[in-house]
Image 1 (tube, one colour):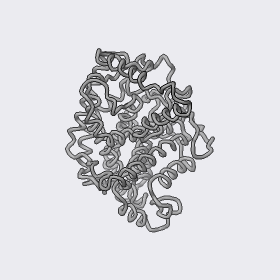
Image 2 (image 1 turned 60 degrees about the vertical axis):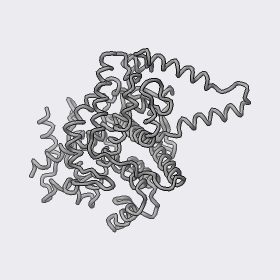
Image 3 (image 1 turned 90 degrees about the vertical axis):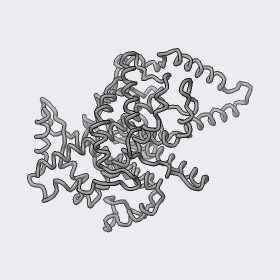
Image 4 (image 1 turned 180 degrees about the horizontal axis):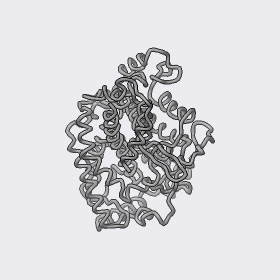
Length: 455
């Protein structure tokens, strides 16, 4: 089966590639990354041979494969009824009896300590209830303040999972792959993200954008080099996320569609159109380096959040006690492995300096990313929307972790963690989003091998 998919991938190539084209995608993707002390080769070895196999196993477990999402939310920015009509854009939600009891019930009870935690949470809710003696206006104001406090550390516009439109989706049965969703509708999404949410002035055209001029991106990169590290990092995270998604679409391309079967596999031509140095006017290798930058940011978040998951009270609850214990053990193994990475990104350079200016910039950073999470509800392809929402929520959760370091350090070894919390939605999104980036790095090795075999 695997040999046949590789053969189909080779058949997807043009009859003859330009001289040197088989290696151009990767010739600049080597060595150290900008704004980092890490190099590409260290990430490749760590991810492909240590972390990826374990992470892939974790993501196939029941706790991580079911994600609740509302795909019916209207686009908040423009009127849009242009939903993709192709069958590969469809998402098949789960019926209620397919969801493990523990996930569906939202239960959290395995141990005496966890039972005590649930009781303490109920007590906190009772004590935190709004005083009935207050006026209606004051009660409303208090509720709004509480909602603001709950969302003040959030980088995403999360779905209301209690909405009648929210449904569980089995991520393994709805994999991210090429659906045929492209053209003006898809371009509008990315254009809105880059042009309106990446701190970029309108007169600075990004490379390969419509009406960019003919300076090959010189003006854009001169601007990017001149901005603060936070704004530069923001652009690189979005570019890295875009690159990761494009790798997934190239790696799981529809190579054969007949009445009897479909075959998905790597499409080298599609990959080169998105990342070849010449075909992208030098942008391809930059995009791939930004993917590695995104990898480092999300890996750093995993290394930082270990204390939250190490607590005995935390359980990956599905209702299958032995499997849940096994998966928590694997989860902690992955987090310890992430912590052992030798060349972590140093986030201490973010929002340093003047405290007032740093706080203002951090809030801008958070609101810009939150806006991007809202744009995902404008994606016309439901499968693309599903994975776009999940990956932005995952990256947003990683950012939340990185900016909550002081709260995480204060988490007690036992008992409730009032200062820092992650919902199940955030946990599932965090690990699946990193799984997508980890898969992208692994797929690059596959594309590199295919191209080398063609020489």
